[in-house]
Length: 170
Image (cartoon, rainbow, N blue to C red; front, side, top):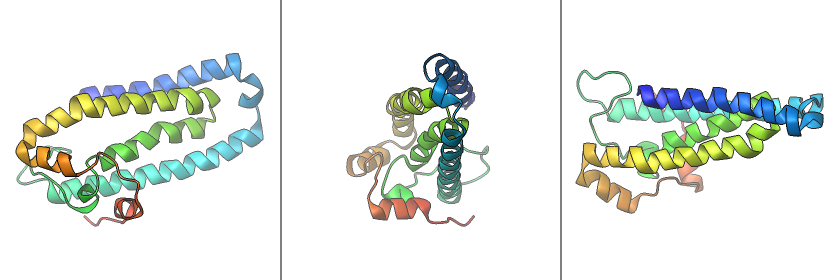
């Protein structure tokens, strides 16, 4: 958990600082354009709201179906393939991948939007493949292997997105 939080902090703070540096060096004209920043901020706020909704829904689904007994917050001990997890294996990560994009747009950093956020998304995909998937297999064994065989990591079909955005009650 600490590792993941540290990585997120590095992504956001490091991405913001690197974006600021690169913008001042290579995109000085647009980095001072107030219209660009206003439009970027509006889009960033919309993406942030989308990210928060997805995170809330996926978190509530995991809390509702993935926990049995007294567990530390954010831990699960039951395999979940309900709700949006019926359609995709990593709906929470899909939402979290939007977070660097939201921050980049909110900051109005051209470098962060064009280069850093996509690089961070690629790193997140690698972490899913190298850390999250093996961890799920260790935790849930054959249930997860079968699930992974028939369920894609991400799904962008209408029914998948509808399930992802549908409000989940506690």
